[in-house]
Image (cartoon, rainbow, N blue to C red; front, side, top):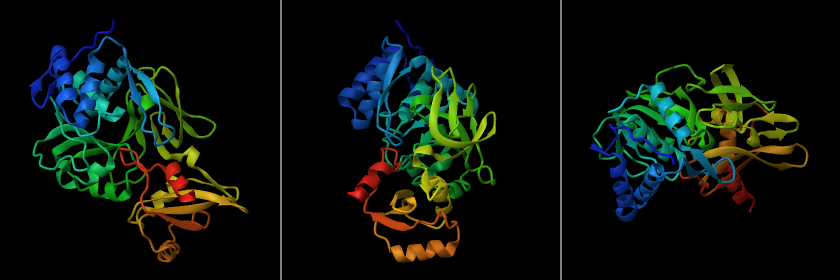
Length: 356
């Protein structure tokens, strides 16, 4: 029978909670709480039960949504690694503004219970710091939340941002914020982040991700990242993320292998093209491909909302930010992109809308 330990300093909104208290807390959240609180209550009850494992769901942003089982011991190890890396100590305050439906929100709860944090819970809205004047040592947000909270982000001393791509516009704005913000790299299978990189304290561009303690990285024959971290995953995790290895604990993310475009024998990475375009296009977009009888695949720029395709193409050509192979041959527009709960664009599903 598995017995979970709760740090004696663990609090929610300033109130100390031990294992026995959590049983009542979980049931009250499920029975009387708002929708987002019910998921918190359910996870807390799962965490303190006699099972050594919990079931979690992936968002489906990079594939078919699926249910996977994680060992509680591995989740505890992940929480401890985060605490060591960011120097988070018992008694520190933390902000939970992510939904507990997915691993990122669940792990904020685990970190609080394992490290002994005072967890402040707010609804997982796009403006989580509205009306809040409290300061937090640690917090996690998706990019949209961070973008909508710029004037208040100094209230979160250490902020990790993940769940969707971070625009160059947001990165530029974060440089003016008096806190320490980090982009995270990870997935449900690695129990959230296994690597981070600073966003607002360095002026250098293309800063690599640095792995957390006890994480080994390598590449396979596709140049995709391979993660070996026995403390958080029993099996080696082979990703579809194309990377450049900088050192034995640093890498640069280049894009998704399954998004690669082969246009006339030239292999193009959509995410690299998007990075170049992010400074000149000021609406939601992504790069994809459509079949072409001569090239096999042609590069297509997909924009959200109403657009003047002719003017945008002229602007792209005049800017000279793209080479002749990267320049889109077509521009398409869709009224509304399909997105995950964290705001990440569902590329394949959105393209399917375009084709239909």
